[in-house]
Image (cartoon, rainbow, N blue to C red; front, side, top):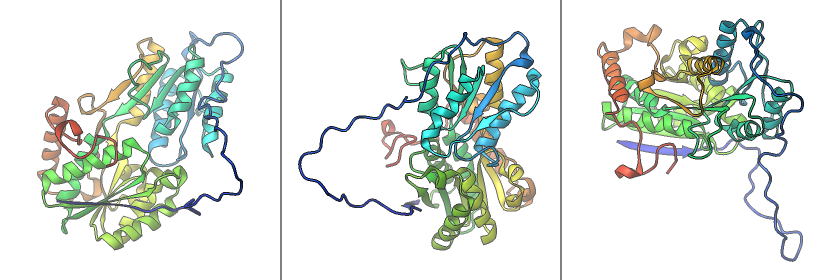
Length: 380
């Protein structure tokens, strides 16, 4: 097996030097307060109303917006499904950051307006959510991709959701290696700061290797610093994907880049190769690329968000919550229009792997503890 990782940065400029315009020794630099702007709401304590239809639920998305056909959209859908079940009328309000400085104000706005439950999407919203939650113990928060909490940091009103992305990625890798005719497959991640993205790709490599020990896996990252380029830029994704396909000659391509990844799937379709979606069933969520999306590595976003909102209302909610194969929290999507091209025994192999994951007998992620090169969720 050969694994090759490259990093391409789409940046307007790069700081590669330090220009010194003053003399003398610089003074100490104050460390920014990560919780600046977070505050306890004014007014009486917030409590869930007896009339469930009057529960106020708000959603703070990540940069990908609620129309990303992916992570944010399905997080929002889970909240909306729960609201509908509770009898809450109308579409739920949502806010989207345009800069990192928006994250705490976006969440704080819901608190100040007396919302009972605030759902925040994405690991990048984790610090902001924790800051506001700590100061407002009478408000419930659900943070998607923001767990598990470190021991001793749990907040009883902050449900931190995590997922076993490496398990879903492993299944995607099995599909990719099975469908590849050239023995060269690829994966493009949005940003190197994204632990869930890394886990998806780590699992993808192991799953592909299980099918074909001699598989070549080409891996690239759109950026190492720009969240907008990483997750909210389909045009960049398409351009990046097209270049990647031309350079590497992959014939199956896994995207782990949110809305940017929609452009990567477009590039795969245009090149006449197979694509693999992420987070949700992208053959359904993004119909223009369904013709080449053979499967998607799923984590059950809508299901888990809805579940925990209902648990809050029922009085059974608690802190961190992990969703894995044993909990039917991850999986793979149907082959849809491409089913006739898929070997008849592939689904049974995938289901057997899922069963082993649920039983805890299938290793889907590298670990230094077992002598591999890198911890799960961390780049080398």
